[in-house]
Length: 364
Picture 1 (spheres, one colour):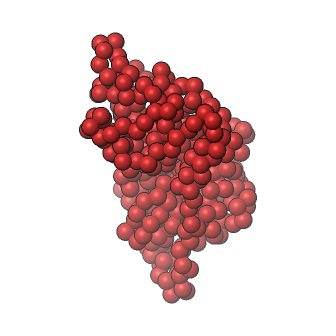
Picture 2: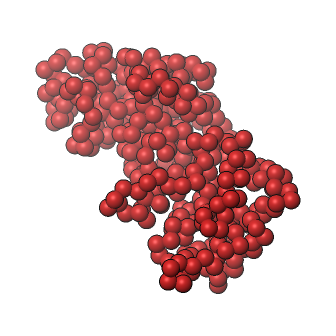
Picture 3: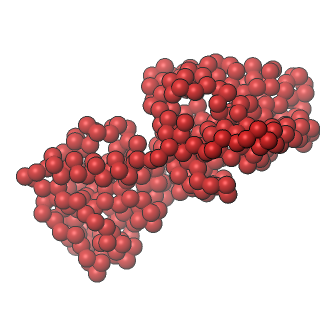
């Protein structure tokens, strides 16, 4: 499912936007439709905040009404020409990030020509527009919906099954990584591991998995067994996998940290920096078609590793989003999700997690 960002100027198209939103929510999850950037903290770089918000969308709708181009500020200057105009910043960001930008004309507005626009918005003039007319509003919106759904459609991405010889090679390579982890005496958690007679937890599952889940860190139960996701969070994970018709043996699970941290606290930056090269090796060996980071630490690691535009986004914005990118071995999708533990603290999040897992069906 695509995430939709609606860009508009209140004095120009606010009435139309409300009507459009009412129709879009009949076809898309309301959580996937963004009309306003949430409050920007004092002292924050508001340009960066707007760009980060745009990065979370797949489809960007630029609402253009009769006064979109001519609206002026208190000094009588065109707002679209101002460097700090939110409408301009958002559109320029969407164009720069190569989002699908759809100009939507309302109130008999016409598409601007390049000379009418600031330089960073001139590519907008080349985008094919959709007009929403009062007389046939429902029909026009349905055409827009069809365009959005067309952009959202993705063919199943399942890599070919490896033969037995390749599987054995991958198993041997993973064992080598595990051996290196066991002997990692310079690890910031090595002493804590030994003092508590814990095992390092590299990962488990199909060495040729199509889907790789990356969690946060092993819990005490996992460290006692040397296997990830065997505690309460693992039960939630298993339940979610069953809803899409697969089980743990079909996927591979690991974590950003490969040792249990004291008191199950959050991972420290130096710990993440130490362990993620091991995770990088796991990714290189398995070569998954889908990487599903579970929780903010795993999401931040993988988005930064791949240098994706969404790397500054929040898990609340990006969960369930299908982010297509390239790895040396081919095309992959990153699908951030809440950590299964969220259900243990907030049962209401189970439906959200289930909906996000549904999106993995494309890759089974």
